[in-house]
Amino acid sequence: MKLEMKDSPGQLVAALKPISEVGGNIIAVIHQRDEKAEGDVLGVQIVLELQEQRLGELLSLIKSQGVNVLRLGKERLLYKQTMIMIGHIMHTDLGDTVDRIDCTGFAEVTELTMVMPAINEPSSARLVIKAVNKADMEQALGILRGVAKEKNLLVIEPLEATG
Amino acid sequence: MKIAILGMGSVGRGLLEMIDGKELGLMVTGIADSKSALMDSDGIHIEEVLMAKRERGYCGDKSLSAADVVERCDYDVLVEVTPTDADSGEPATGFMKTAIGRGKHVVTSNKGPIALHFSTLQSLARKHGVVIRYEATVGGAIPVMHTLEHGLAGNRVLAVYGILNGTSNFILTRMAAEGLTYEQALLEAREMGYAEADPTYDVKGIDAAIKLVILSNTIWKRNVKLSDVTITGIDMLTNDALRLAEEQHCTIRLIAEAIPEKGILRVAPRILPRTHPLVVENTLNAITIDTDMAGEITLIGKGAGSRETASACIGDLLFIKDSHARGN
Image (cartoon, rainbow over all chains, first blue to last red; front, side, top):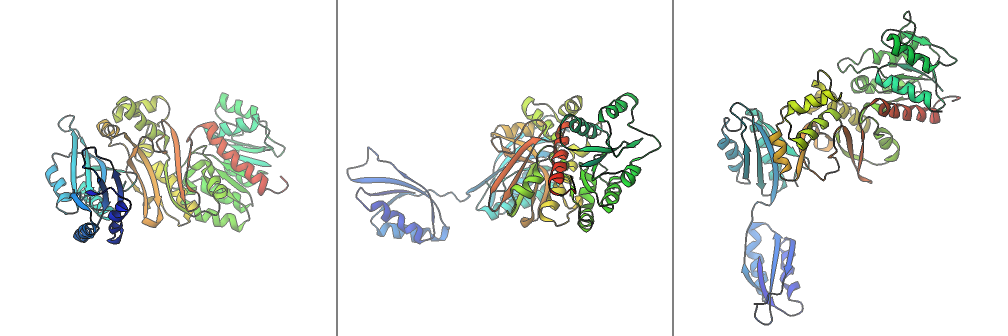
């Protein structure tokens, strides 16, 4: 989120304090003096992890500190994993393979790069899966393993289960 | 200390050459190959035996066999370096049991008996007040067993990960570096002498899984078997898959992995960042041990070879000489 606050002592702390109060986790604080900003107003960008239902509470807490929330960007799927699949990926209904992950609601296939050397030869694909959290990623991986077994595809997983 | 050696393949010959060339305080009193054997309680002239083996193809007296050496020869330690039979572990296991029954220590590079009969052999050895050491069975020259037993003593081991098969690592290295197909890389491995005529054990992940069983049973003593390991080999890999990994600054390696807390015991090709400590090239082996106190320790070294395996066996022999053998 991007915040706007007075450029005076204690303002940044006042803006950050409510985040821990609602159980949020601050990932990064980007504090840049914008030349275009008017006089004593300071722009700050904060990246944080927070349960979605507590967002409203956080926003009103920040506002009550006299800080303006300028922009709010949401990224729901924070965990990313890359795997590689080998086999007859296309002819075993690639659409279905991807759907089985996407339909969970907590994980999605967000990228797919595929190489098909020749008919009847196994194809190779790199796919990026994003999930809400680590546990959901494990579950999505479990689904993919099951689909791969059913369709006789080889799935190569990263060594670290979730990176 | 007197030792008897069973097996005169590349490991046995390498071991004899090293013992002959170094002043280690080891006297060879018995040697057997698949066709013959010889014994001399005053010490065998190693150079003559090596020459005999080279010239006529067998080492000693054809009326004697390995069993005679095991049962009758005067030795403190039996060094069992015959080829692995991963299905039965015989005849090596029988020889080891006989030696232990005679109150002799055992050093081996033979994976079969250790993977199949670890707990039986260990309890038999304890009963007779001797030790059985098998450093050479996992990771070739890498002193992983000594590290676990001594260097990391007192640590709780949480997980082990490793590249335990040099042949498959060579194939993957070549596929990634030169864009070779699996078949081309396998052919090259054969030409270099890294792969057997039948590469099944290496490329299907079975050899790595056997070593994972040995490591797991050494660390956690849960008596796991080869059939408990989920195994996927590298024979289905395409060079496209390696390229797709390399595009993301990653590569693919055959990783053996044991994490008892999560119930994981598997061998499978995995994606790793190129900068990962386990990403070693060609026939090298690498083992990461994750522990509660020391954190992660990674050992890298040559996983096979005559002198390298001899190094592991001699390490075991000198350990026994220093700490167990009577009268040295």
